[in-house]
Length: 173
Image (cartoon, rainbow, N blue to C red; front, top):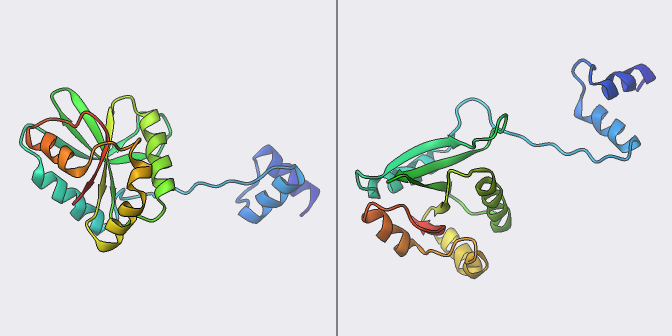
């Protein structure tokens, strides 16, 4: 890479720099390149996730509203809750997972969103009913208990009464 190209990269004026070029300059400067990818266009692309949210919506009484794809109130932040249950001036965020992969990553991602969203007092981790997800939750439920103290029966009981749950929890539907 020429000295001129390196200079343009450092000043942020290079036309169409490649990840490889940026990475090479970062290494020389003693930096580690970190990238984040965010979807663009239609926010929800997963038919399974839409079906999971529809199952939750079918269980809500008329006194509660389910808003979908609720952006976090942080300027220039592209993160969003999959949904939010609102009623009686209270709100509980919903993060829908059709297929649990990395429980630690899911927990961390939700904790960061909750930290950055003062409008959500709690989070319902909505999980698709499958043998895989039930096995993952059997193996990791107690590790998640502090962050998600309520179980599905307690969440559904609050929702049936038209109440936003008082704490975070895991609901398998």
